[in-house]
Length: 471
Image 1 (spheres, one colour):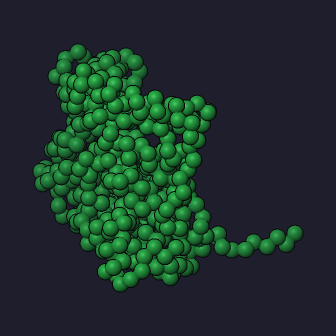
Image 2 (spheres, one colour):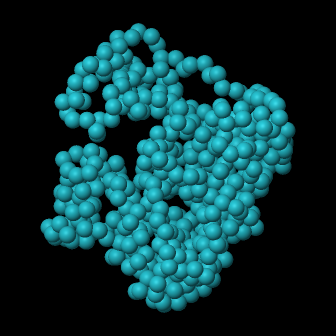
Image 3 (cartoon, helix red, strand yellow):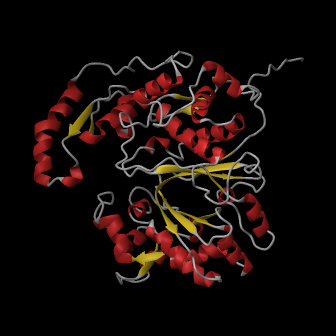
């Protein structure tokens, strides 16, 4: 689509060739980029599941006509008139049950009951924040809709968020607006879903749970903010099955994962152990949200051992178990873009700290142990994917300067190679039950929702304050 947009912007007609399963997403993408009605040529079926002869025959019978029509149509591309409600329109009226039924039918809810976002409720949600309701934080590239304070508040009311959570929601919206994150990929076929991590000294006071059941629904703050993100992706960014969401399976909406700030503080008395926010470049005293899209996760249960040397191999094994197709992001869809997350319980963190291991020591040990056979790695980036041309071997990738030498130390196909390019790529968070020796590993989706963090600003905004020039 990017090539077609560049071509059309230069006044050169284009046609984008897409699989029929992605035609709706392609049309929505074009609309989000300001080119509603961009010509599309649809291929029959999925290209990966057809023989070359079948694909060519289908292309000739169906797709060629679409290409010719797209290139010879003289109609000018114009943005279609929107039929969706404006910000202050009354979209529905009736009883709470009727409102919920209408929102569900219209695709504006996540299937659960919502709090109707009346104008009065939304205005009261913003009262005292100082924010201009119509301030725009960016534009959703997937839908072309403005990311406004008002739209944040509408979905916050629906999700049941408290007004004190507004600064967090704004910071998450800033992540969605950041090109580094790539929110336009939030509905890709692997079905990765965003994980929000909250760090900072105020998380507990704001009601966020960092202890037992840290990823379980039930604690209002963690659950409602996580739900808000899913609603916002649907209603503002357009990630529904009718538009952009092409997830084959998908994942449930995830509650916010809050790191145990107090426990991190106690670790810091003996070893250097930065939070995830610090690992991503922020300060200890700052409240920060970090976000990435995760393809999968695996529980690492009952980690047995009383020393770092005993527990590290099992933790590393868990990390390798979430690394599969994701490795195409190390080479294929992007360079050096696989950065999994390991969440360990405070008990495990204390096991490391008692032995004098700081986070850097843990990452270095995990880097040495979290390895897979070179043959398996090469299957992921070559044999089992069409994302890397020429079915490359790791030695070829290293020779091209894309991966470091550790990936080609010999030509033994059974040699063990790391799943990340360097130890710091293994992010580690501390949360969950302090009396359990459990961990959880997440495999991130690389450039389809890259790790991005924003500082949370709790101070009231000055948008609505009149500044008088007394000069």
